[in-house]
Image (cartoon, rainbow, N blue to C red):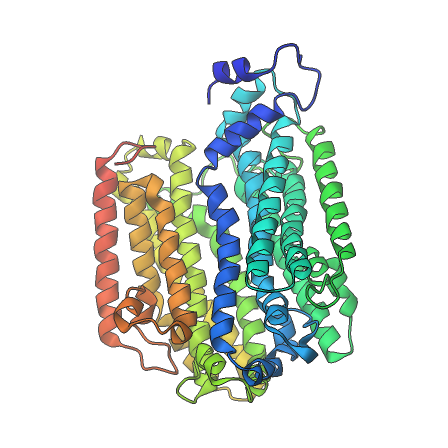
Length: 553
């Protein structure tokens, strides 16, 4: 995009007085930039729902299998991780699909909404592209308006595709379109929240973090309210404080209530309007909440590249540690209720939970170790992506202009992240162990969970090394690493019901160490994965030394 291009694209005679002048042209530019991200989101969420539907058809092939699912889903733990369970007293495939698996598609839609708005507003300001745009015939609110319009179009497309997919499977057309609309409503609600957070902070990461925190809070409020509703006592009204809860309260395929979506739309409109008001009250490129001023001189311990890397990753490590600790305690505390709930569940579902060997407790704990390893893998990939941001936003170049070598710069970052991986797994395992021990009354589970979580460290290191090599050799190909984590999720959770061949299953780095305490830890796999991860890291350092900054092979 250039200033001349945008100036010529602006309609003649519009003037500069209109606050949304140039919105259409900006929307075209955004569509051009998102030519990969847009189909990834709008096709990915419907495909995920299609996958859930196919997996459910495999699990529940008879009415008896379907009835057995209610043992867990009707419990407080099932309400926390699924929803209020509307219609589960007379369960059907579509009711279970929307009422239990639908939550994860709603979370994905929320992420889509908030990330899209942040990407096309605050990120554009931070990189300086928005300043170039605003120098032309473009209104003050055109950027935000175009971003919200794009997000609304994506939400509508996702809603239509999900509704069409579920209708094509023979489900009720009205309920299918309602469920699709509820997914789109969540995307709009969190797009509105992001429209506010991008005005508060001048940093895209902080704006995304605040909106992401709101998404997490919405999940927790909905979970607490739904648990109370299932138990028949407690603050069930908490579900009505959550945009996710509003969509679930539509009760697709049961009550088919459209009116809760009016709350979501009103909320989205109100937060978007607030974003416009706040945007007019701040300076361009600045946030309403000013950053905390730092000391006039850097501390002596920041003299080296390793210390600088730790300083840059410190806030992320603290945030991830707190989140994983809370998540570990929460998942651990539901160990006993989950075991009780799965007492009469179908064998296929028990196998998915890791209990194929008959030891459901060990299977569940091993599966949670894998789950936390995948989550820490997300941390590792995001940390490598932050290196790309340091480079493209011009902060790496001044550092490398000093006596700091390229190998020291990238090596320092990789060392900090590599050390952060076992630390985060240890924190998650400790939280899970404390919760599980309190739930079951068995303190010995703490040691098992610590070992089971730490055993996955080499697999996450391998993901880190692969991400680093992609960044160093071909930065634009870095998003490919998400495929590795996605495949690890599918192989770890659904391999039993998909009947994946062993050779295909072994393509995931997370399938070699073993899910302790259900399986023994493979020392050979630990050593091999560690060596491979180290080799990838070395290759990444060598590749980074050979390429130009802000470019790639």
